[in-house]
Image 1 (cartoon, rainbow, N blue to C red):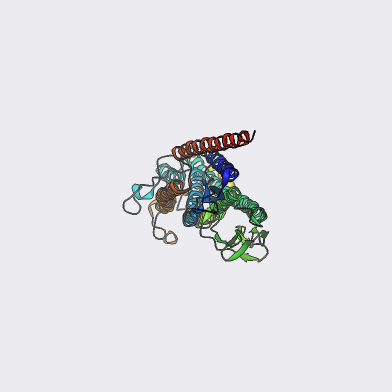
Image 2 (image 1 turned 135 degrees about the vertical axis):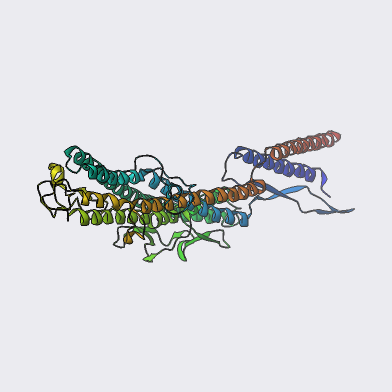
Length: 476
């Protein structure tokens, strides 16, 4: 049987268990606003009984372990959906930067026949679309008074405005491209730091848990947080080993094994000026399907690259088409053969300096020495409404509108996908929070329960002490 001293030990064990329970409840309450924290529970079990005259007699309770309330499946789902959401956010940000630097209002809700103002997706501000129209309107005005130096000066101003707009758009979109490359470099640097953190935490967890020292719950929480931060940058795969470490791989390349970083990411230029991500040690270009790295490259190599190419093609064809007509005309002095534009694309298009210094050199007459003739001016004005074979049978404004509308539709699509993805992720986070998160009501209830049990255990010890005192006094 226990006896009074056995009962006293029973009370001490109970006192210790209730104290530990109170401490864990307090730890949970302290982390109620910590999103990375998974609530913990004290596992109690009946201590070994001892034989007595009437059978086995209980000896109270003892603490067995402190366990973490965490669902591995939910963690993996959150990790996966975080990669998808982060990719969409990067795409949204990249497309918004592109839209802002395009300098053209976009109607992303536009719909209608190709070539209509609705389908073009181009708003009413003074952007490339309006400047292109202004150029051909300038040729039309000049055709009504081909000898007017004032009309010629106005035309040159409009042409210079268009050239400057092309130059600015080309430069700005190039800066967006460079900005996206810098973003890739920053994300790669952050990913490598997270890989080091995860490897270090693996070491700390194994060191803490070796020899049955218990589960390092708080360290595991921090590691899970780092894993989810890494998932925001790239799609990753994780495997939890029997000793508690987590191995991390990206596109089949093992990045972290046990407590060692096996490989790191590198922002690599294959020669095109467009950075790609590869595993540095394995020298393997990674195929990323999630995370901000994927989203950034998706915009840079997709919508942005397409838009830059379209605008360059538009400028190139404008230069070629206008020059082909203008060079065959005659100026007020009878000169011919001058190009109206110089350059080869959007980056370097400019009005011929010979014309800007002498407006009379603009060649709008179709007949030599016939200064009042407007054949070439009319032909140039009509270019604005002509279908250009190199532009897919569209006019200059229609082709630009189609290109801009395509970008607007891409942004609209990403916005819709991101809204849906946020709903999915919020649902998963709520599920995980309901399972692993700290409930104030539940913890306060547990705290009161442990408090009452602690008080009862203390009362038991006091009672046994009084009984021992009585027994001692009986011998006096």
